[in-house]
Length: 427
Image (tube, rainbow, N blue to C red):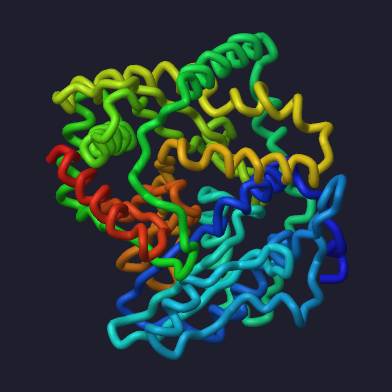
């Protein structure tokens, strides 16, 4: 692989994610459960070859005052695959951090349990969002499959694939810019003024050890939820957000003057023709929901308001606003200055930051097949430091998984919140 460059430029989205590392152990996981054993050696080889297929994964993130960059690691320093001898070692890997400054940006762990194999992919968020993690899994899967009949296979490195947010923004018509910009300002104002936001009653840290709260929703209930959503001209994500608003209002009733707000994540691949970026990258944005100070007793009424609002947002370039409203002003500033500012802002606003549900969408069974399909597959969102809170929803083979990374002193309230959401969800 001598044709792979030693350096790659960092993108604005890489740097933006890195700015918020002060508030998060910012990584993503994809966990796969099988009812049989995988080929350990072939899987290890496929994982390490993926660092060549998508070369940025085999790099470390090098910080500089002006613009950081990605530096390719020597082959001896970019082994991505490890084996767990028992459940304790597997869970230890799961709760451990991934350091983007040493790399590689992808690590994987396989555990041969007595009930079948467990495979966990861990990816630094600087290099990839949830959509890209699914692309990484697809690459490993396809290489694993090919190596069965072609043990000497070497993938062609994706050197020229675009990782920039520009691949999305260039599809936005210029005449839509003013409307997107002013809509973003109105949305941000409603989200910020007045500042008092209803949040989960979680205290600060400690930020270790990391644990996960996970709820699996079986396919029969998901089918009933889909029927309910269709009947109300809504989506499954609309149901989750509505249930989140009602659960949040129920769990913390300490101050009726606080605003019900949520930050949601938008996958901007929705604007690309094949729903896939040119390379492994972050192509996500945030959108801001403000319900107000009062929530009705009727779930259906809140769902109607939300589904109407979301249809309006989706028809008007949802997720594009932050890139037009904030990034042009901040882009000329040095990396170190923006990172310091982001740290101070996070510290100042963390006690008033709305929860962040992120819809990580469906995992295609065809992209995570390793000779056999997993019986379970789900994504785990980045764990953030309390009192900040991010939780995610992913789907696989008709099921849904609600998940969050948290810490022992906060897990009880997160579990209570998840129980409330499941109780609020119809069907």
